Amino acid sequence: QVQLVESGGGLVQAGGSLNLSCAASGRTFSEYTLGWFRLAPGKERDFVGTITWNLYTYYKESVKGRFTISRDNAQNTVYLQMNSLKPEDTAVYYCAAGSRAWSSLHLPATYNSWGRGTQVTVSS
Image 1 (cartoon, rainbow, N blue to C red):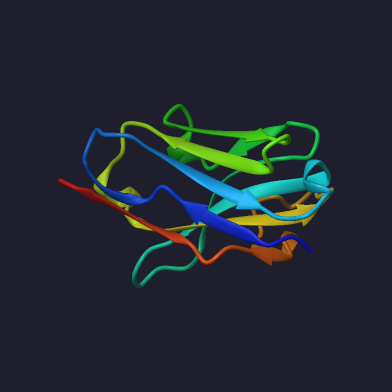
Image 2 (image 1 turned 60 degrees about the vertical axis):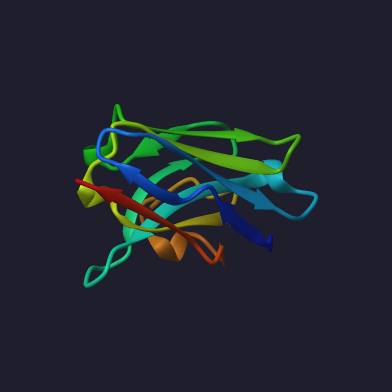
């Protein structure tokens, strides 16, 4: 397993941008599929997007064209660039890792390592 630490959250106005980072420990980072999820008050954990170990990306429909996931294997870091933010994007954002995961990428059970999350608040 890897240890994950998210950063970059904060308060932003609607239409603004944030770039979240997730730093991972471990020597096999490049073998992991890395997903982003979010949890809003009163709601279930929600899949945002993922980048696989072989660089395939997959997003929740409502964030396509606004959010971009990338990774830097040399820095053991995955990023979530969020543009055109909306109040409904307000949540705690978590990154998660699954070793060579390639199916059911939208399901939390696919991932076996989780960070503690970073708060994103979008004001209207």
